[in-house]
Each structure stands twice: as C-alpha cells, then as structure tokens.
Image (tube, rainbow, N blue to C red; front, side):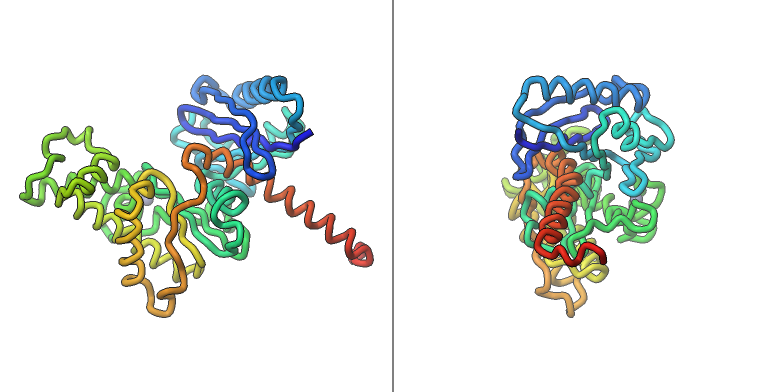
Amino acid sequence: MKEVVAGVDIGGTNTKIGFVDAEGVIHAEGRLSTPDYAFADDFVAGLDEKLKEMLAGNHDLKLIGIGIGAPNANYHKGTIELAPNLRWKGIVPLARITDRKTGLRTRITNDANAAALGEMIFGAAKEVRDFIILTLGTGLGSGIVIDGEVVYGHTGFAGELGHMTVVEGGRVCGCGRRGCLETYASATGLVRTVLHMLSDRREDSPLRELKNSEITSRRVAEAAAAGDIIAQKALDETARMIALGIANSVIFSSPEVIYLFGGLAQAGDAIFTPVRKYAAELVQPVFRDTFRVEPSGLPEAQAAILGASALIWKEVKQDYRGRAYMQDHPDQEDE
Ligand SMILES: [Zn+2]
C-alpha cells in the first residue's frame, strides 16, 4: 500500500482534491463545486464521499491525512474565518468537522502558507531554512518561513505582506485601508497602473484599443514584450513595488530566498530582472547580496494541492525523524 495525503484546495468556485504521496506525485484527482454546499457540514459530507469514491478506484493507496488550503484559514484554530468568497459565514471549524467525519488527521491553512509548505516539502526550498514566498495573483499572498517553520503568529494570521502600507493614503484596498502593497504589486495592481498611465500619458499603445475590462496582466505582459512603452513602464513600476515589498520584508526576517509564484511570475525575465535590480537598490545596504529572488519550483497547476498536502507530510516526516532518532538514542526516552 502506498501512503497518500489528500491535498484539498478550497476556492470560491471549485474545490480541487489530489492524493499526494511522500515524493509529491499526485495519484488521483477530484473536484467539488464549492458553492453547491450552503453549509460546511454538507461540504464535508460531500468531501468524504468524494474521497471514498477516489479511494475505490485506487485500491493500492492508503489515505493517512487531509491537508486543506483555504481563504482566511487559521492554522492554530483549524477554522475558516469570515471568508468573503465562500458561502459559509462566520467562523467555521472546518478541520474539526472533517476530522470527525473522516477519522483522519486534518490540518488547514491559507493558500499562501500552503504554497510556502509546498515549496519547502516538494519544491525549490527543500534545503532552505529561511525564505518568503510571494504569490502574485489577483492579490498578493505571502508565506514567511523562519528556521524551517511557517510563521503564523499570535493570531494565526501573520505574514500578510500584501497589506503592508507602501504608499500612505494611496490606492484603496479590499481590506478597507489605503496604499497596501497588493494594490500595486499584483496582477490587479498592474492593471490599475496601466489604466492610470493610459490616462496620464500620451504615447500610442495597442492597449488603448481595448475596453478597460479587457486589459489583463497577461495582455500587458504581451504588449510589453512587443515593445509597447506604456506596458513596459507599467511592468517596471509594478516590479519596483514588488521590490519595495521585498526590501521591507528582508529587514524583518532576513530570508535566504524570496520565491515569486503565480500569474505575474510567469512573465519570466520581464519581471525578475527589474525586481532583482530594484530590490538590490531599495534594501538596506547591510542586506544587499544576502538574498536571492527566484521563481517557485512548483508547477502552477498542481501547487495548491501539493501545498495543502504538505501540511500533513511535514508533520509525518517529523514523526518519522523523531522515531528514527529514538531508535538510535533509546537512552533519551525518559527525558
Ligand atoms: Zn489592504
């Protein structure tokens, strides 16, 4: 029997499930429509049924736990709290409900912390003890790892670098404040920068032919690659804001590597080259050349499932190591 963990990625539209082994190979995949379930209990019943169905088709697999990545998840409490994109209102003790229903060890964390765990267990950070991952999508998510552990903080919600203020009184943010990093340094932030530049500058641009709603980060990256000046300047400005966020974060935890993940990171050198340049310029001199900015080592399509499963695999691997240590040092048993 091969041991696998169910990695569960809960999104507003879809919940993706994958059976992940200790090496990060996905053996079976499934899907639930999240909004079909008005209550968390119904969702967990649906999840339990789906897991059984997936196991029925894979008799050689043994399910040993469930790791869940979800918006507004609290690792300490095992809850999802006030998630705006989910139907389940208030504070939902999802880990406990799932644990009871399935009898399996269940852990939950938010998407960006799951990405950090995935990077640590299966990705580019296997040998890195101190790193930060920035997920550049609709918003900017982040996972901070210090000495091999994800930082959750007193509340369980630590490490929301997307909401550090980088421009006082700046752009309105979904969190109700102004000038947060993610209003500039995200796919959405890039589009906001383009829209501002289109009204503020006079250069011709193919982006002027598009309706505002048709301008996406991908289209901007394509226009920049084709030589469009406004797109290039917007991408450069976005890179500078990402670098400002990095420069501020480096002072806080002195990471060895900053990994960039998600839609914007797919732009490759067009984003990495200016981010590295500005980060070196903006960081406090004592930290210059002490950190690297690199792409995530996880495939975009599987990262969420791998990261969620890593919640359990990290614990299991620590258990294994603990047991092996006890076998080698039996005299330590009583300490
Ligand atoms: Zn904010």
